Each structure stands twice: as C-alpha cells, then as structure tokens.
Length: 194
Image 1 (cartoon, rainbow, N blue to C red):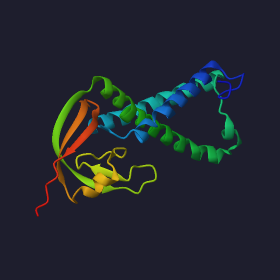
Image 2 (image 1 turned 90 degrees about the vertical axis):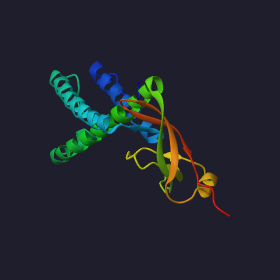
Image 3 (image 1 turned 60 degrees about the vertical axis):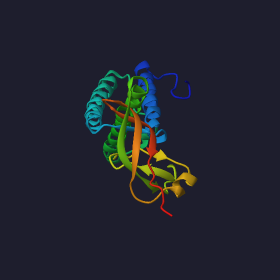
C-alpha cells in the first residue's frame, strides 16, 4: 500500500483513501455489468442517501482537517484560490455520482443475486442497434426500462433475423425491493407468411 500514501500519512487519511478506492471500484460495476435495473423509488432513495453520506463525509473531512489528521495533497496544493472554489462543486458532484452508482446499482445488484426472487412477466421488446464504443452493438430494448446503464445484448445473427417493431416477450428476472436483475428475454417472434 506504500504507493497509495507516504510514510507520514495519518491513519484517518489512510482510511479515507481506502474508502475512496472501494467506492470508485464499486461504481464500475453498473458500467460493465448492465443487466440490473433499479426501481424508480430506490433510485430516488439512493440519491437522497448519497446526499446525506456526502454531507457526513464533508463534516468528517472538516473534523479531521481541524485536528491535523487530514490535509489536501496532489495538484490541489498548486491551485489558486479561484480554481479551488471552482473545483469544490465539481468534486462534490463527481463524488455524489459515484456514491449514487454504488447505492443504486452495485449494492442492490449484489443483494438481488443472493436474496432476489425469480419472477416472470410479459412485455414487449424491440431490437436496437447501438454505436457506442463501450456498449454492445445489438440489443433488445424494453419499453418499461428507463435506466442509463441497462443493456440486453444479443448476437448479430439473431439481431438480423428479428423483425422491426415491437415483439411480445417473456422476461425472467430476479426481483427485490431494489429492482430487477434481468436474466433472460424470450421473444415470441411472429412467423412470416409465405
């Protein structure tokens, strides 16, 4: 761990670094594992909880700073007063987003994997082509899902065989209060008439 802090770093500052690293790593889960859809109610609650945790974190930083157990490091020391004032809201917004990703996506996804109940529902699906650099290019879009990090990927051959427009679908998912982990989408594709 010597690469993360110097020898004179205080124990509380080491804890801050570890918490920061864990939260940053946790925020990557919703970006790379896109089958979980948090419920609308939980997304809002996660936002409020993120705001509270950010405020508590700021209070903790202030207490540690006044005790001499935490001090800013890195490029922060080279910034002038105006740049520091401008950077504070940007840093807070970034931290709020990262906390929200953990609370709305990562932790509920882990909970669903262990405690979720398997459910099936009827819906419709449409094929969707994506051009994003980090997203899959062939997807199924579910009209009731409005979550930025959800993708249900299919291969190119299956994509080309599907008709345009909505198709009836049976969705299998693991569900809890926090949301749904969508496992499969079975399509009922109408057969073409000859």
